[in-house]
Length: 190
View 1 (cartoon, rainbow, N blue to C red):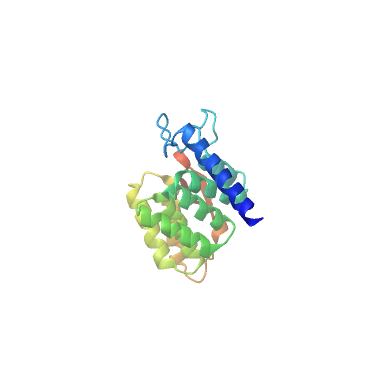
View 2: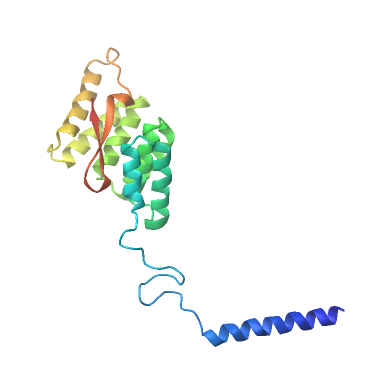
């Protein structure tokens, strides 16, 4: 009985190999579009998951934004925009440790990315790291050449806190995220 089973298995394997050879070897990359086999180019109407994440942030759906940014990371890689988006969503959910981790990773990729600098400064301020928070706000202000009023306001808000140390309390809700072009965020004092 086992001999018949081996013979059937061998015959089945041979048929599979013959069928595979008949169609020829499959390329690793689709030559027409540079995509793996079985993947087609996205349609022109395809949804940009990074943009979806930003829209969910605007709508206050921070958990869903994290999921969208995570999908964008799978599709596009862990870009500075994606990491900043995930960190910003964690910040809005007051998950300060996670926010700090993602924002620092974004700054490891681009240490001059103003939205990540601002968001990390808010996280550090909330954690009591006021000196480092002020330095990050100052750096964001310098990189922006002082052109953005919102960045100036953030720096002023923190300077007021430092000048009145112990008398003025600020927290994350004193800042809000403002959407800029191409999914960038700036923190703005309210």
